[in-house]
Image 1 (tube, rainbow, N blue to C red):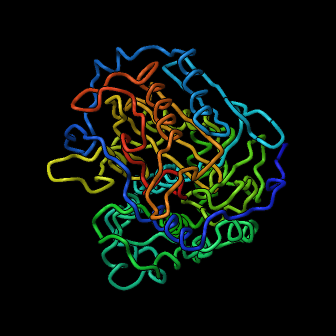
Image 2 (spheres, one colour):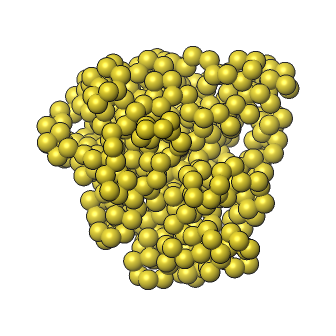
Image 3 (cartoon, rainbow, N blue to C red):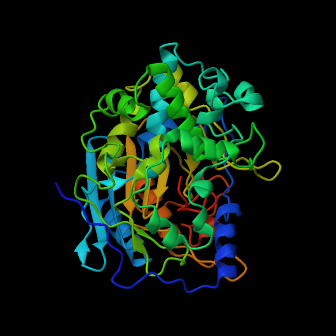
Length: 457
């Protein structure tokens, strides 16, 4: 057993920006739409992008040298450290680059455990869909049927379980109400709440009480939805939802290093997890030790990149859900608003999304971000070709005095690694009207599920 002690840099946290700029930066991070959108091909009847079987059969084999070079380029762009697992059929590659602990010079390792954030949502959705298969949860039933004392009034009658799972409920996120000091002094706020325990009902009430940011029926990513989904699961099974997910999803998938943490510490070997909060925590603080009750069934899981590949391969291969439930999971809605006549390059299903990458391919999976830790797992539709990647410096993006994003070399390097891992080698020339080269700026990239990469999701 190994765990990293919760340590900050030997230097005290200091904010190099004025309070007015702090507000501008946080506001931009929370409210700005993605920096750029790539056009996408038309979706099929289920809302998922069509996949060419011929293209899948002719995807290049793993190029280990290219994978190593691309992961190293992610580090060279400014990331502290990263590790990844790539699979193509029975062929596998695992690699690591950079530092797990910059102060001590400890290197990153490919088998580290990591906080995977909102990848947890896929696990929670699978558990809910298992209960739907058994007839114990109706996806189109109002949430008030299951949580009458919590989700009341019009929302209790009109918000359905399906709306929770695809983020069309219109219910606000609880993150800022749970961490109100993030707007004033993020370092102080995160430090003071390292060991705070929050019950899921408390988180749900914070989100329900916050003003909605989007009308019901339109996609608006909210962690509150998946806290409520966990409470629905608890109500119908009579079990703690994390225990249910562990028994019926994690163990059923045969995962050996995936778990909901029982304390603020990660059980196995892991990297430090450094939070910059857009430069407002300087130097970045290590938040690898943290009470994750604030994330629960929305984002508390610990896993490894290899376990994530196993999980998504079994899920997409129909080994965790039956055909009807898997079809429901892959029935998607646009993840953001587009210009007239333009299709979204990202569509969200039930705890699972499909995303068109810069080289033109469509892939299934999810990403996750908690304080100090980022993760991304994508796969081809048949689950044959996969990549899962983790990194340990979050909210590295920077903004000017007006809250406008500054040039960012790290995000394009991340996309280049993931895109190349899935497409085979370096990112291929784009097709279907996409840009003809690998992305060189964040504005050239399709969006992830939140406003900017790195905010808790």
